[in-house]
Figure 1 (spheres, rainbow, N blue to C red):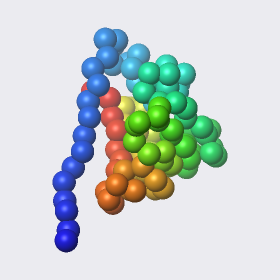
Figure 2: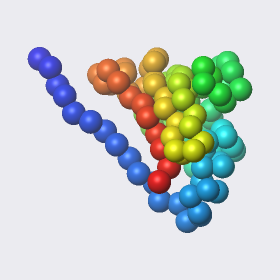
Figure 3: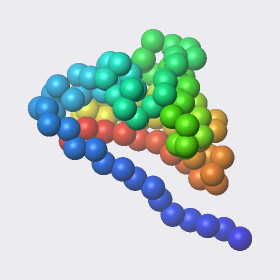
Figure 4: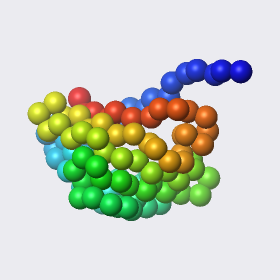
Length: 103
């Protein structure tokens, strides 16, 4: 049996778009968002540029831990493209998860 669908989320922040992108696009989001949404985010390899691998761990009772790889960081379009390639939503049956932007 094949199941299809999608999952998305939006978060409203009360700061100018340029400030939100400065935090999210640079990787500073780890220090700002981690305590609220995640137990921790560890850099497995890389420096935040394309090719960087992160391991994301949620608080107990949250989704499973996953690893993501950053493919693109486009500061002009304010888009960061990622793929989860291990764990997380993939363990729940999804076969693709990625692409995050600020607007």
